[in-house]
Length: 57
Image (cartoon, rainbow, N blue to C red; front, side, top):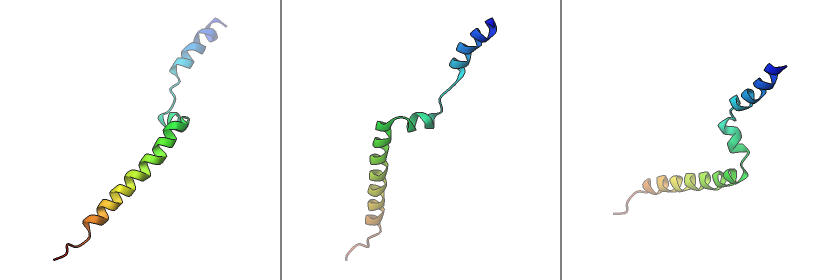
């Protein structure tokens, strides 16, 4: 029985929480990513569209 008491804290310390679980458990981080990622993508899309407009002569 003494071994199981020692292994329980060791097992708790050895467990690492995956990065995606940390991200998905944080609602503020999800909100931030949900606003920033589409904004950056639309800005990049707009810049690409602007570069493809032919110059007037």
